[in-house]
Image (cartoon, rainbow, N blue to C red; front, side, top):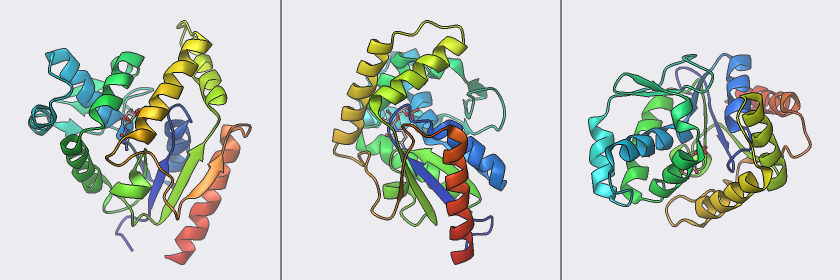
Length: 228
Ligand code: C5P
């Protein structure tokens, strides 16, 4: 048993609601929440700012090592990561950064750096960590693993709704296209692709409201807690 509780790993494709659901689960069970997607996004954003070559694995690892990483809680609606004292929120949510993050996430060195940082953030337990490879690679020893899925159409519709709620424009067909391409890139890569860990619980949230998904995960948590 870890000193602060279990590790709850939530993996799944783009736009499935891992962050929203993960934060709600964390609040319900009194755990902290870590979004690993935000780590890849933050590094991609910084590399874009500096005009670095997004295919230069060693250069990106060197950059990641120079940055001061922090994972602030409750700093903003989307903020879960700060680098060099700057909290990153809206600037890392757009598709330009999304695409760049998915690109650098293919690189073996970048992935190793992220894995080390993520293991450090979660090793003591008491954490909900979301991403693509948490149950399969970062915490194969997680006490609870969930693979959250939904149809691409449902994910695109939710994303469009989110954007409109923020007063932004949303083109459903374009969002669907982004989602399908990102799925292909994340599932098709050689290094730690998006896969369901064999021992992960599969939850399809296509036509299930968020609250019910959260209830299901909290129930799984209660069961897992008794087992450890
Ligand atoms: O989840 P989010 O869309 O914020 O993640 C951005 C990108 O970071 C993903 O498309 C994926 O390529 C990458 N990622 C990853 N492994 C993780 C989390 C995110 O490869 N554990």
